[in-house]
Image (tube, rainbow, N blue to C red; front, side, top):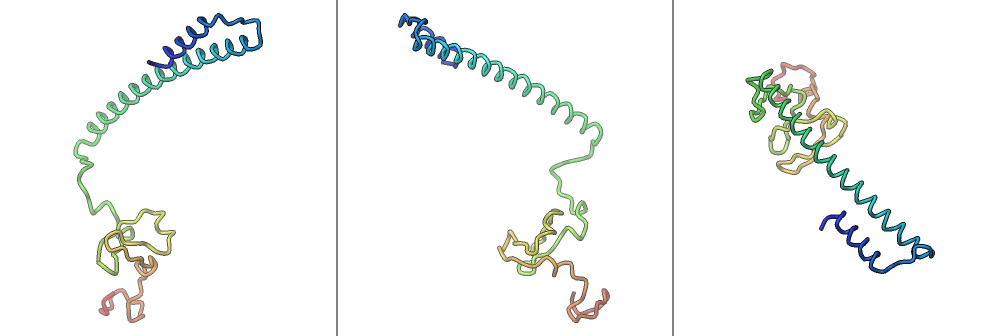
Length: 144
């Protein structure tokens, strides 16, 4: 039973009571039932509008997908491309060696927790250009 049918049922119950609509109680009950009927109509109309908008959005989505396939015919969203990240967005966990790709908002964090091993490490150490011996030489052979 939908909302409109339930309100109709309540209206029938009220009619069966032979309410005196000139009394305070009768006026209140009649006003409540009328309000319920109006609300049921509004909800039904809103549901219809939502269904119509959903169909419209689905049609737009299909059109956009069709357009994308025409404009970007070789673009395959399922392929992972390492080249789409530049070196500064990728860090390596010092504990397990896992490559982590960071979002720009992650750079505001002082520490990052590796999802692979669960160890937290300092991001500043990942972007420190100084070598381990402290000579600040990019071509130093100390291992950095």
